[in-house]
Length: 416
Figure 1 (cartoon, one colour):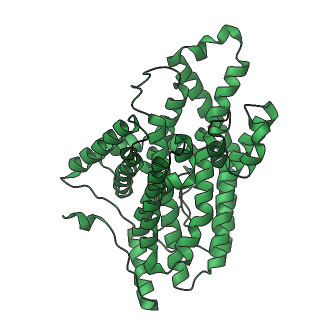
Figure 2 (tube, one colour; figure 1 turned 90 degrees about the vertical axis):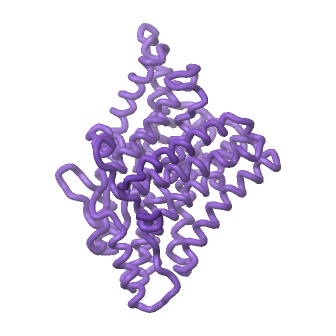
Figure 3 (tube, helix red, strand yellow; figure 1 turned 60 degrees about the vertical axis):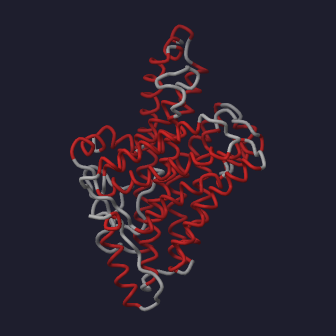
């Protein structure tokens, strides 16, 4: 079976209702038929790499050689997943708009409402606790935190502010969520894929410009333009509904992904002022697009069992809380742990375990008491506003062990 047979296409260029109906059927056929727990496994791997990288940042070559920067790679996977899920969700909304079931205004209002209720609770809970405890620089930079512009603050100051620096990637995604529906829902359908590809190349062009004009490395990393190619790579996959099924050549794809990630890791440790350094993010994004497409179809065997492991799936489900809370946990331990117990955070291996368990507990508590109830509320609000989505689409965020995922217009995203 050829490469083209793996990837779904999107018919474009007609305004006839019959064409839209067949496009809608095609989109339904391309959509996952049920909740795919392996995606939660991917989320868990992404956030765990970030946590390990942060909790061991001051220890040389621990737990892996320093040239393997887990945190940066994990963030890249998050961005690709975010672009994929949000765009696939918006594509299904666009299908309903094109057959006259929904208006653009109602669809966009529901989208922004859901993004606010998904990102806001844990984000503002973290900000409130950090303000109350006077952690890091949050009392000085709180306006940037509450306006979701920490990425611009970091780029402006060319430094990482204590307690809030990790919010840069959430700020990038918030800004992406604000503008992306305009492209997907309001652009002529035949132009959407071309526009997504143009956005990807704009991200690469931005980094080339940063190298040519000697823009500080931090700004190149945190500004939203530097993440456009990763977000757009996932978005292109989400718009086309691409999935990679199992085949005899699967090991070749695995080797290709591993090779791209290895080359990206080597280039990341090279001179960042050289033009070849701009290839790091596209290489990682391409590798993760293949991984996401394969996960959409579902792995088999040992990989499926690993990604669907209950513990890993739960960590993926609370991955947003894990990402938000890890800094809070680390700073609270560093400030208030009694001197007799300081060995728990000075011995690297113990610190990984202690910080990891404490972060997991905090994120689970946030999920159970704050995020999950609000997820149910926003799901119900969307159902009332837009009605049920046609059979074949799925919604992970409100799913529980005892309740199948409701079929809503907007589906899961990488923010958890």
